[in-house]
Image (cartoon, rainbow, N blue to C red):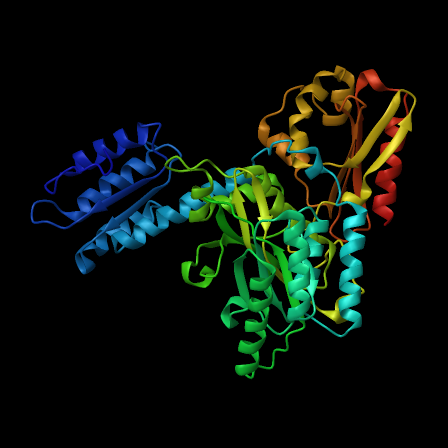
Length: 509
């Protein structure tokens, strides 16, 4: 079991035997040896046994930590352990915290060497140009009016352009118009409506009674709008009602309320937030953050870092939410951040998620009008985004080839690619006659910073890897080394020439 109790009267030999046995267990990754002073055994003798096991290599490569209690009585023992390179801690809590840091470090290293799934083709493509154009036009109009905050309809139009589903909505200027609009919407679709106050000065509409749910008639909708206007007037707030938003009442029993958000860290720049949403988001405080850009794997890691992420997986007869839709919403948010450096804040709350997918019921967005001229890719990101603008479709002798920057998931294409290479081509490229590479090597070939290191791949019409060109620059970006490799059975088709041309264009850019 864990912990292994060797009893308080344990002599040095028992420490040695226990450490060796535990270290030999393949299910053990790290050892924490603890000693509490007793009148039956000397702490220094136990420390010598543990230190000797480490120095003689009996532990292997597994990290060993220690905690020798006892204050002054443990000084000699701690010095012995330090001399053997074994970290020692004064309390069990700090020792356990150190083990936690080791575990986190190990997970981070494993994540760095992880080969992601291929993902959906939509994720691999660049953001549609019309989405960027629609959002850019909205931001430009807001900046032209000297505003920082987008209205709810404007914010929803932006996220909808990037593929996050939103309910249909209508805007009415007065309570009378709310009644007429509600009659049209209910007459056409039936059901119930939501009426919300529209004001650029109100951040949380529910705080001022600015949201009315489940309105099943035009009369109730109009009355709700009049009540909102009266409450705002009585509050003598600086906020001025600019109208009302009407949308169908979305009833999704069992759906989880999520929040997606963007904040700006003074050191790391834009940061994406995910967690439990709704009006109690500040009370529940179940959120996690990640640095954009996100792919499906990173989005999944972000969701897994929250308690509500476990609820999304399903529980007690509750079906799991659509994982692809949740990740897709996070990736869409990441694309918005990548495309618009002027964006200063964004909240999608709540985002309902269940087995039927996701839908955003409300959204807030803030821009910096002075930065509206800046366009993506966002230079403020701590991690350089995937340079999707360098994708090309090239017609060659035997069909159309996709030329694009390499992606981490391309490591899955390498084994088949290497099998198609002749021995001499492999030797000239890798200076060794090796056809099989460990996963760590494939990760190094496909996970680049898109700055000093860059690689382009050519994908044949059947989707297989046809060739790779890459450049590795010196720190001053004035010189560098390049490499080119084309599948042996595809020589003479212009693949190498095409890959070298785009590599040179990128190096000059």
